[in-house]
Image (cartoon, rainbow, N blue to C red):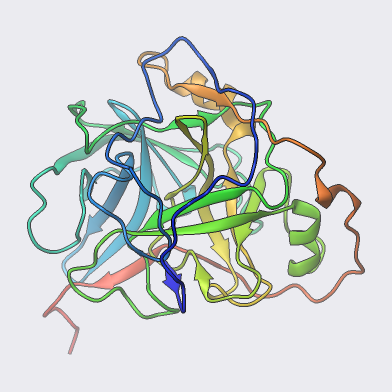
Length: 318
């Protein structure tokens, strides 16, 4: 996550939403240790208990992405993090706070299956999501819990407050300093019409959702790919998006682009037959100001996915 000049503030809800409509599935979206919301700095331990850290390790480098725990055996992430469905060398870390050092609440699993969405398009970035089956189930605790997913009828209006978390770069091509503590950041939904205008008028599909701070300086970055964009409704946390791509990192007038979770309820349920995920309908109130947004087209910027290859220490090729 890229953060600059971001003051620590207490969160006060600025929207009214109808009560969450929970499906009759295992309880999701609960974070008992998340007693306060801050933005742009280290996340207190246990604040985001569904956050996953995905690492594929090779002799000279690592591929790092984020993900979200959606039940005791499945993680949701981005399709572009996976060049194939080969599960070799992948580790999934739950309950992790720091990339280095000791994480006493951590559980580590390998992968037994990788299911990228069958319509994922690496050129258009559409349908950028993947389901990951863990080798064995995790044990839930205050530090490891599943997130609820936005149901198909969910609406996210322009200006809705959301949060993104991850261990991604602090600035473009600049990794977090050691011990690389999980970062949290508050960002606002930017309506698809507005987002399309900012990106050139053609690349944001209905399967995507944008969020960021248009002044710049705050947003997802390399290494955050696959991580969750979440929103709170009542006492329930709901995943609205999956970190996908953007123009550099947190550039002014270029919000991050996320895979919109809600269109994929049917597909997710077709893959996860047992231990199904909890889906919640998130309902924005009032009028969506984005519905009246229009613009003339402008040049499309060169965008990049937010996965990252990290060099393994001491292994730089000579």
